[in-house]
Image 1 (tube, rainbow, N blue to C red):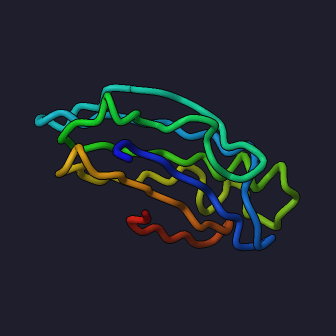
Image 2 (image 1 turned 90 degrees about the vertical axis):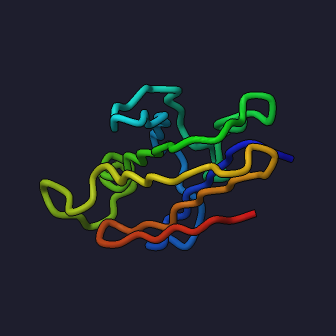
Amino acid sequence: MAGLSTHVLDTVRGGPAEGVAIELYSIGQDGSRLSLLRTLTNADGRTDTPLISAAAARVGIFELVFHVGDYFRRSGAKTAEPPFLDAIPIRFSVADPKAHYHVPLLASPWSYSTYRGS
């Protein structure tokens, strides 16, 4: 299964992060950003559909922006104002458009990590 997927885990609560706004951009050779989509995570912390379908997968540089500041405010987590982490950008490359790319985010108001999942 090719394409791109993601999920967001709230490490404060130890569970999925519902309602996180996510933006996906394609990055041009000159560094320009082209908006591809904006979506929200569901109750499982995932998107309802792949961010990039297998049919639309291509070699390139992409950026996911996770808007966690609003999510943590709504969740009641203790945060700073303005939040230490508000919008988290993750820029990554797709080298093999026939492969599946899964880019999850594990986040708290103070830290985050990601990895290439399966």
